[in-house]
Length: 283
Image 1 (cartoon, rainbow, N blue to C red):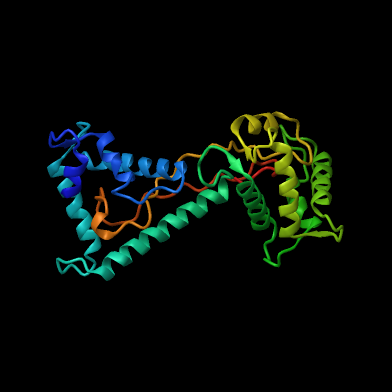
Image 2: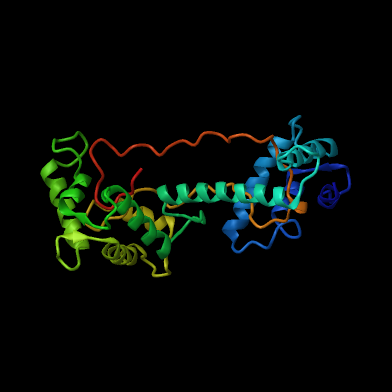
């Protein structure tokens, strides 16, 4: 409730949404390392505000805030003895951090804009391309991809409506494989994929600022498919709503709902029926 009083800037006994999302900033949370992190924190507390505002009047009262704080306490009181020990608080924090890491890993697996800042830097692009190819095309996890395996990207050996003929797709995929296979030994590995991805990134970064912005992405995506064409997933990601890490238990913000499994995650849609075009991300 001390936090409530600090957030209530106009001292009217109610928290507006703008007042509540101040929980994302110091002194309630550590200084954010970058603007994207601050944006994700604010998005999280914006979501929490809607859950805590149980009467949907656009304000959080002291009673609503206190009820949420009580629920948060009961979540942390793992043995139900009416006290939260340091060990219980640390365990709750660790579980929450593991969930955040899982969400981040899943997000980065399907979206090259891993940090959600609206642009793709070289580390994001290279990491995304390497991971998605090795995950899809190295089923035995030996770190090597043969041409036979790589040809899976050409799709079914039949003509598919809206897709180039299979022979053309096969030739494009073979050309892409030969482009990545720098030492021409008939297999490609993660090192060669990273080198190819670096070269591809430089081609897409038209202004040479070290980032692929939405305009550059759209220009590259509008270009007819070629062996070095980019993925077609837009780089702007929906901000993740993970709570900030490293917050001491006493400053832990109220939790909007009692413990239990969160909403089911929607799995990424399957690849198109015509097969994966070379250079496009897995979906």
